[in-house]
Image (cartoon, rainbow, N blue to C red; front, side):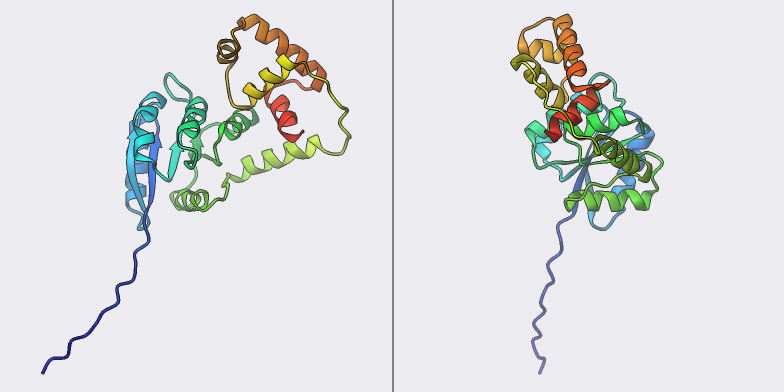
Length: 221
């Protein structure tokens, strides 16, 4: 007489869903193959531009997006800001050739959670996707040092209180959200030259030389 045996099924963890925004076809294909080859990941969308990503990605709601910066048309940084507004829980990992601090900080301020260079090894990239999905902020070693050194430079001296006008605060707030100068002008219904004039006053008052330094000081206060 055969005995009936009961089997307990072990629940399978849901795969991390990933979308890719990259204008280079070969890189898109390589990343897609890499992600689909991982046991715990699945690529659910590949896009060649920020505009295409904004049209389709919000409906698919991936867990993680890999984002290039130098895209045709809309920049990757602008795309990050717009995607985060539509899908706040989306974790975005910048994957780019750039290592300069201006683009690093613009990306992070816009809403990116991590920043890697494209020469990152496949195993490190897969690990970074897992980390950003779990709430960490993975960064390439050199980039991480750049971020740390930048904030260290901001410490050590007591910052004097700075009095900004209401309009200057509005401009700085939009700047911190990743808006470009023309976008700020359109949002506040003022001219491009007026924005530039206000920014010059902001830089002078904060004793900074770039929009990144101004944003960092604004976010720290």
